[in-house]
Length: 328
Image (cartoon, rainbow, N blue to C red; front, side, top):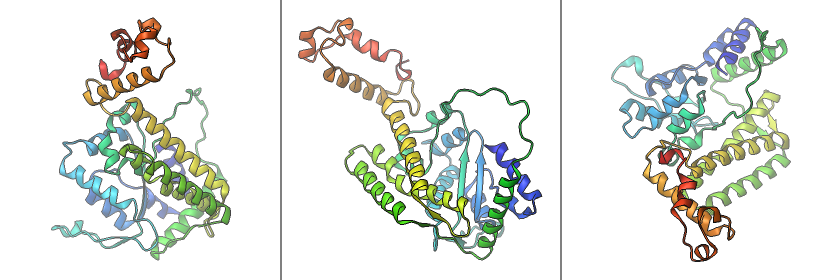
């Protein structure tokens, strides 16, 4: 993603919009640096390589004050991009670090990392703090493709022109501290009302705080995605339809469900020796045994009489648990 964005941005700059370079945001180092960048350009995209390690630093119980402040800033900025929203000025003792009022800042973070590092960095406290639900976590599971020996050196001319026009429009809006409000047609509005009610049901019928928090921002994330599509289709009069609505809601439901399944399977966070995860998994396999068909685990020495009395063998537990990472 990083190299593709760099190539597209270089083509846009060459196409007559040199100011578009300002849309490339900084590497996340500190809250002060991030706010300073947004003060200068309120719409930025930061591409962060090896993002899993940054997540580890931010989410660690022993995170340093700088990372704690950065996390608080990221949480606050998420809801500030709408019309009429502002980020209050920050006063530092050093004059050059001070910021003015930032109107409707739009910060987009794209994090690239290998799955193992990301899922090891994630934990329940990151969910409960609201940080993880603000992200879309998408795992690429496709087959490795063959080497492309003659990749495109520059992006398609039509794509470059459309993105150059979009950058020019965004620059004009930023300079006047203005926003473009995205509309929805009646069918899209009805579907989003239905989706909102469904999300409310997911939240209200689960006692697990993990479920509740991960679904908490699903409606808003889908709205943002559908709106982004509408801007790509018509930047001057953006209106999303049922097509953009279905794409956005299906994508959010898919990635949220996949993330929940990772939590339920114990594949999130530090695995080996984690007693909380061990206990949760032991309970889960016992629950599966009780609900299973009689005779399903006879090979583990669990007879009909044992199953009826909810008795099981050590061999059953060993066969279900021994090879899991948390029991190594």
